[in-house]
Image (cartoon, rainbow, N blue to C red):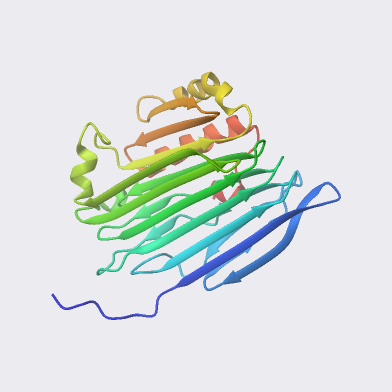
Length: 273
């Protein structure tokens, strides 16, 4: 086969620093490059919320996107995305998404992007890294749709790698790597992997006291009914939840309900559109 043509690819970067100004969290420094942008809507309760926008409309063929967050002591920030992130088919090159966060003492970050949709023949390598102070709080959710189920799409050949590395006070406290490469549809059908599920959700809470909320989390995920399979466990000071669904729509609805109840506050407005 002929080598794929060399193309000009998207290179998106966002770097954001949140500082404390008179007891309120505010943007201290922001830089944007390429198609990545951050917008800050007015939220009724005064919460500082950022909505990340990819003006390129998706990710494909070797695109690279990187987001770096730095939360100063005592600050709070909620990050979400304007819509689902679509990973289009590639003729060879692998796209990368790198997300990094530093959360200082007493600060809290809620990382709540909308779902990632993998198209057939897509290739994505994604990495999430966080460095937390001893009493910092971090809540992360990631949803992945394996193919566009409404279109009857199947991932017969694709690659998806998802790496998580989270440290507290410089020590690794959570590490996870998920990798699919090849006929993902057949892999998902295996009972030891996804049992035929087409959507995957991960929720990690590394906030102070998260481990003690295990029973509460299990009660909330138990409200999903038989359509969603979910399990929760807690160790090493954090809470981890995995969810599987037949399609992204039903999984997304349940995760949004869970997070609203678990956080005690409504989801960002873009989740409701």
